[in-house]
Structure formats: structure tokens, C-alpha cells
Length: 125
Image (cartoon, rainbow, N blue to C red):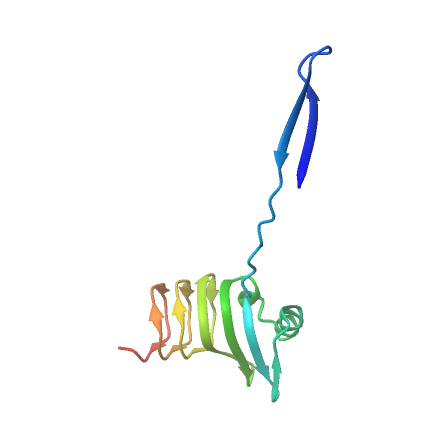
């Protein structure tokens, strides 16, 4: 596909710029892979955010993550897999995955921990 721009530098000079537009597919990485809650499996990101807001897990919504498989049980986040890149982990159980954020509190069971540790239980030690 060709596109055209016409612009003038001076009143009597007109430049014509021809450029080619190429289709570049965008890759969208899902923030959430799945949310398990009340014996339901939810994979729609908008619906997951709505549930997290209703449960007041704003800290998780504000965090940067990828392909997270999470669960809510007894008002606690259980992280099953995925990459937690940045943000504050306030409380929950991290079962597996990669963690690079700020760990404030909770239980870290297994995974790759490369974040900042503040408080909690690290079962890897």
C-alpha cells in the first residue's frame, strides 16, 4: 500500500513524499492466562480485571505481568505460573513462575526469584 504526503516548505515549493506502508502484525501478550475462582475458569482479561477490582486486588491490576495463571481462594491470590515483572506483591502464595518485582509479604513456594525481598516466607531456602 502506498501513502502520500504533500507539504510545503515555502509558498511556491511543493514536496511530494511517497512512502510504502507495510503490514506489521502486532503481537499482544496476555497479562492473564487464566483466573480460577469459585470453580470457574475465566480467560477474558476484561472480566478478570473486573473480578480483581471487586475483590480489591488493585495492587495486582497495577503490576506488570505476562501469562499469569492465578487463583483466588479465601480472599488470597494464588499465583500458579507466569512472569511477574514489576509491582508490589502485597500478599498471596506464589507457587511457580518468574518474579522480578517488590515482594512485600506472602509465601514464595517455588520459582525464579529475582526481585526485592521485604517480608514473608520463602520455602526455597
